[in-house]
Length: 243
Image 1 (cartoon, helix red, strand yellow):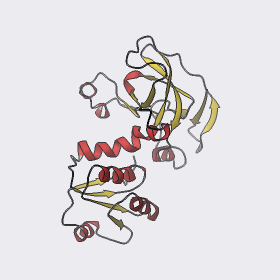
Image 2: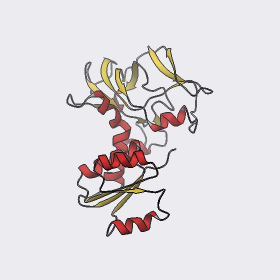
Image 3: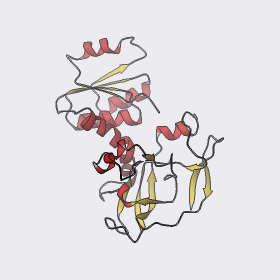
Image 4: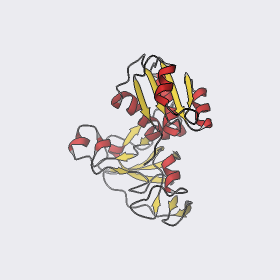
C-alpha cells in the first residue's frame, strides 16, 4: 500500500510503497477514507519539536474508514462497518484500561507516533480501538472525532465538570480550542470567552459564536480582563500549548 512516511532527518513525508504486516486474529483491516492533519503532525515534521521513538514512522492519528477484513477472533465488528480509530491506544489490561480510562494507561501508545499510523491506504488495528461511525457523519468529520473533538469534549465534560449555564474562558483557539468554543456553545454555556495571540484564531472563534474575543497581545493581565468582561468565570481551559 501507499503511505506517508517520516524519516528522522527529513521535514516532509515521503509517499512510499510499504508492506502491511499479517492480520492478527483480534485485528481488523480498515480501508482509510480520511485522516486529519493535527498540529502535532506539523510539530513532528516541519518544526521538529516532537521527536519520535523510532524512525521511519507512518504518521496520522485522526482516522476514519471502512472495515475491509476481520480477524478470526473479532466479534464486535463486521466487514463493511464504518469506523473511527482511537488515537490513543491503551494496553487493555491495566486497572486504568479496565475501568474505561485508557487515556491514563501507563503504557499508552499514540497512533502515528509510537506506532505506524493512518496516513496510509490501510491500517491493521485491534477491534477494541474502534468505534462505529453513523452513516450520517461524513468521513472527514468522523476522522477528527478521534482527537480534535474528543479531547476538548473530555476537558469540558469530564475534567472540567462543565454545567449548562456556566461561563467558560478558553485560552488558545487553534485546532483543539476552536472545537472547545463550538462544544461549550452547543452544551449550553452562558458565555464563551476566547483568548489567543493569533488574529486568525480569534476570527474563527468569533465565527463560531464566542461572546468575547481577547487578543492577548494587547493585554498584560488576562485575569483582570476577564474580570472586566464577566462577573465570574466558572471554567478555564488551556489549549495554547503543545507537547
